[in-house]
Image 1 (spheres, helix red, strand yellow):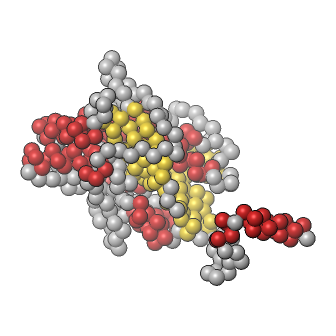
Image 2 (tube, rainbow, N blue to C red):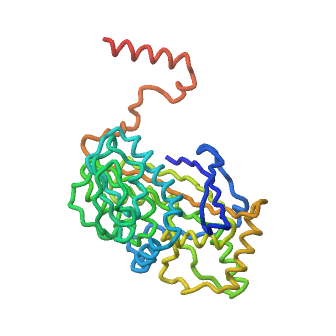
Image 3 (tube, rainbow, N blue to C red):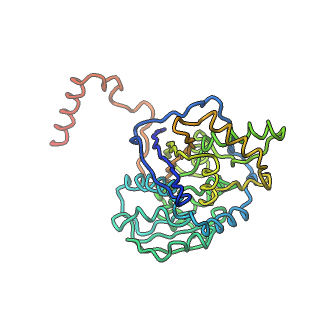
Length: 361
């Protein structure tokens, strides 16, 4: 099942307070915002493979996450992660259960727990590779009990069949062995346990990717990865099934944030701890290349008010661990009514009345 919703945000800059953000949601979730020049985007993806490829430097990613906590604008750049966390919890609330413990895998500074209450769960176990991220908001009070553990998403330490639900919001896109991580989550879940995740997809920051590539080709005569490769929607369902999950659901949403220029966008990415961590990345970006990329960005995607849009594609995934108690699909050919009956209101009314009589009997 594929759903698409989008939200638009405006990231404005206050000249007196540097990167002070304000946001205006300019459309409802059901409105799809189509950015210009979609045909000119370039992106890469990581297809499912039988062997794990080392794409990201996990040590560098940990250092980036540690460093971001000390950025003066770190807390003010929570807007993307908070928005995605809220949408992820919305999906958790669709499950009519109350969980004793929720594991927040790759919790960061605690974005998911902001939207959890005692009606959903009693306790949240926050895990992340960065102790400093986990401790940023440790003095804040929440409605649920919190435990904080340093855990690498690629090497989970949970006992088999011990967890009811695992949430992961904007963390899995930095995992090298994503199939292996999903298999470990599946192993840790109890039968009929559920994984709900959100991760950036292949269309994320396609405007930035395109602008940097064109500028680098023109200035340096070659290309290098400045935006991390991300997975496509079509691959997620296969990975979930391969990891042993059933009743899988995958949907995609787009969040568009507007920035004054490419410089504020890259500054915010660094403050979020979302800087490039590809092993084959360049150690630096030349000044003239960055200035050229800024010009390309405004030329291709700039708005009339001088701002530039940055698209964040978020892939939401749900997978259940198999259990004998789960409802199974009917066998092919066992249907008692045709789908064409749905187009006939009179016939549907007769069928409904028959079902009511059978229920009373």
